[in-house]
Length: 380
Image (tube, rainbow, N blue to C red; front, side, top):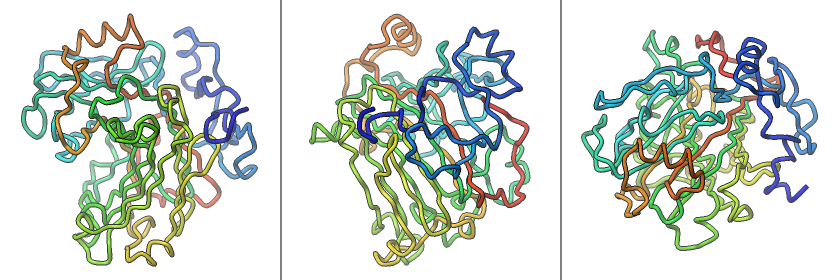
């Protein structure tokens, strides 16, 4: 194998192999898949390179983006002109003002589960109405596991299918293509649910806590940076509500993978306990933050199940660098043209992030605190 940071096989002997639930196995066979492993809750992490503590992480859930009916739903475009039947069940639109700066989120048009079985997210220059007005660009952003405190309906939403609490490890297998110099900011994030109907002492960014598991700065002045990934923690300072102007954000540029982000890599986060969170790429831990470290740097510590009583939520997004409109000729086409182009030419220079799977593992300390969620939705 290659180095721990560059080689997926430190975690999985075959990361292409699908995880399949007993519930969906027959549908997977009918889809024509043979390279899969049936997984049950509690099965041990494959840990093929023995880089994880033996027996610590046990399988819990996954989003595998299988092209089968029980993993898909329909979605109408914002302008009511298109209906997609390739929208990933278990997700919802992250169409917040923070995302919809230079473009509008329209996941019906700009994201879909492909025939190969991964989630493709693109951005194009195409006039698009959105939740925050009509913009010159259309883009894609999703969330799952977002719970709104005090809203009795929140746990019934299809997106509310997992509770993210301490004692959980989340792995995302992703690649970025056609995006260099585009002005996009593909990202995989986690944020505290306390921002959604929570305590006012914690619901202003980044007081509730943000974990950037992967961001790709496509126009960074350093070539290695724009061809690799950054991982960052964002937390607020001791004065509630002022963190945006003065906050603590330890970060690392994982330049060891420079030039390979167009290939699948596994970006992961472990919420170890109420005092420690760590991140990594493939088999290597790249950055760790602790409560003691945060306090020593004048910050408040949000990564506890006492502050974020509803846990964290998971985000996939194609953002805009500096909230600015990109200037990239390969983005000037319709969503239908882009879909057809990518079907015939997977190397087309259309900025996109492609997610093969998201896998959730827990250890013996994990608890869902008996909080309600959609345990019936099995999306692998």
